[in-house]
Length: 307
Image (cartoon, rainbow, N blue to C red):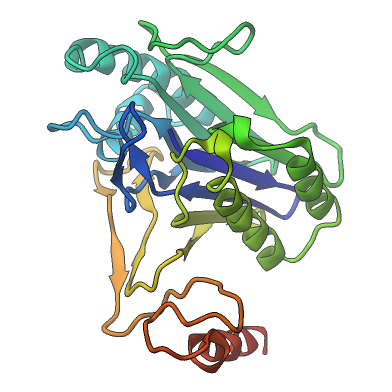
């Protein structure tokens, strides 16, 4: 189980998802699994992400299956609400026919779509084979996927939206209150982005997360005025030379069956540095204090970006 959080208002939607995968016994399998992508259809642009089953340990990988399943669903209709229904049916059929060997407890999966309709409304859909929207979550996967869709009210100047899937039990009312305040104030884009990142990374240290949430975070952001141009970001607790990109799938009328999955940008020199106390030893291993090493680089970079 992982954690994916969404912060949304009239200006933007921000999604932050950690990249850790674990077994049913909470043994860490990977710290670098992609779980987030972007889709565009005839009347919406949305980020999709998931929590639960990441792989069956053989050929099935959820992040690779998702774009294909979305594309197949869109062949019935290229509009958002129809795609949600068709995707639920597609997932039900695939899991029934191809994942019989996976135990019902390990076959649990929840997928979230969140973005903007062409009307400018925030829209969010949850599709799951174990979450019951009215009663209780099931300990095992059910035969069919069900869905729940919510939309922001029309006519409100600044609707706010907060959602989480996965280890949402580790979140608190105080957490939600803090992010609601930022959304209501229409805080600058980077303030919301950093809040989403810190939210997930802080949860990873909480006992209720049970060690299933990591500190490497992929972020995706949609700007309401330019929803078809998603922005990807990445934060990590280690020094890295590679930045993961968003998976991409085009669901519009006439789009070809082509997906981008597991894309990355790489450099020869590290460009991802975790935030540290200024007097702590830099995580690059130089032996210098962070403020005299890559903290200085990060400070210069931030100044350049705000100039």
